[in-house]
Length: 102
Image 1 (cartoon, one colour):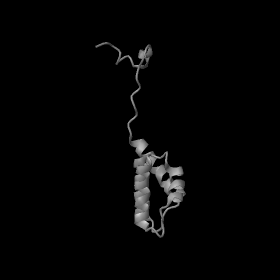
Image 2 (tube, one colour; image 1 turned 90 degrees about the vertical axis):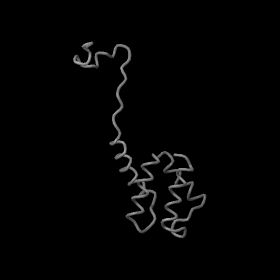
Image 3 (tube, one colour; image 1 turned 45 degrees about the horizontal axis):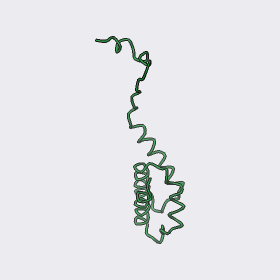
Image 4 (spheres, one colour; image 1 turned 180 degrees about the horizontal axis):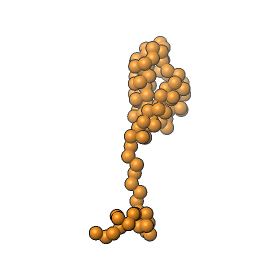
């Protein structure tokens, strides 16, 4: 995830809870980005939105990451499995009904 995408998420947390409860400075941004930079943007956005709706206090990294893992699994489970590409002598992987040449 880009720093810009991440900043939009973390900025929303700061706005939702107030800068006195969740101040944004370079140290905070660096630490939070360290733990979330490899995350899926959509899943992290959904996790942040769910956290804000359900909690009166700002999140700890671990609290948000726990919700993120659930959201990521939901997104991955909803994606269709990619079709396997057949190459070379892989025709045997196709059942006889599909390889009849008709």
